[in-house]
Length: 198
Image (cartoon, rainbow, N blue to C red; front, side, top):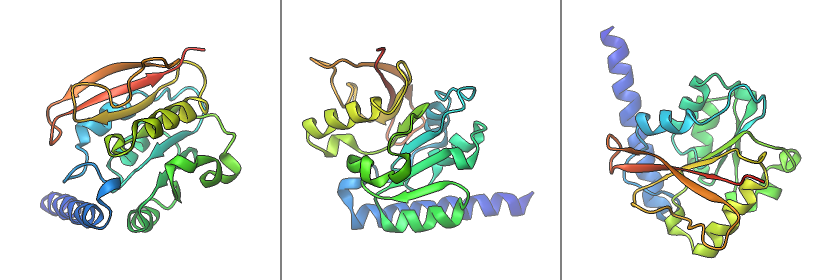
């Protein structure tokens, strides 16, 4: 029992060190000073329809906190595709989760990054990309691109640290819903779902 707790603490400390190194080397692609909380990760993963049999796409898995929550929902590792921009995070994820499809690439260039999966439909797309670090037009293009890769009504799930959604719906054909404020995240985060109903 004590060994298990020690191993968990070591893993958590290791995650935070790797995360901090990633933030220092590429601050635009990392949105916080510590990894996403497990409570936030579970809230995001809970939006997956496990009966759909469609694959799941995760953008910006980082240290894999949300990736593990997705797998804990019962998703087969071969049905999970993770696109990570950081070379270091990618290497670490491939070692930690060898059966998951870990892809090193840019989420703003998914047609090239996804290769043979470029035309696939995904049940849910989950991202922890720091969208507020990118220009608004790039954010809107990304949301529209992701919604085109999903059946109508299925969500893009993301979180932000502000009271308003990171991509407004003005003049767009998608909707955004606030799912939950997660106070136990540091800093507190709001989980959002973007959907298009037709």
